[in-house]
Amino acid sequence: MKPGVKLKHDGGGMIMDRDTISDTYCCESRFWFETPYASLIYASVLSEEDVTGGRSHAACQMCGPTTVELLVHAVDVRALRAALNTWLRLFSVATEMCELSEVQR
Image 1 (cartoon, rainbow, N blue to C red):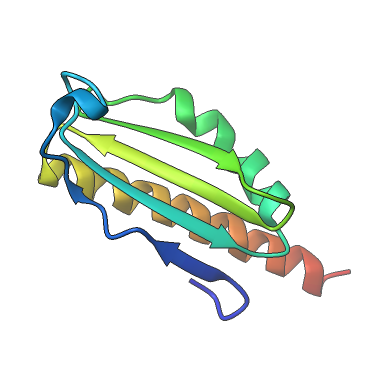
Image 2: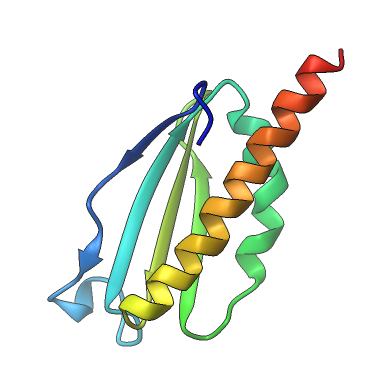
């Protein structure tokens, strides 16, 4: 991520008690993106929540005016890795576009 974006991660990994998320998903990872562009980034990636590949699911939410939370659930570690590659790239591109539009003002 860019220098102006603070990224926090809860460690993620395997969930041993599958009842805590669902019968389908056994892995999860949670990130928090702290940035002045949080609301713009949230709005730009929100429509992607509806896209599900069957092996993973992601959800975003605002956690204050400058923080976006990303939660990804997956059926296994490979699906989690693939979903995180997609979502972290979406956040990265959204951040770059916000920064670019700021420079052009």
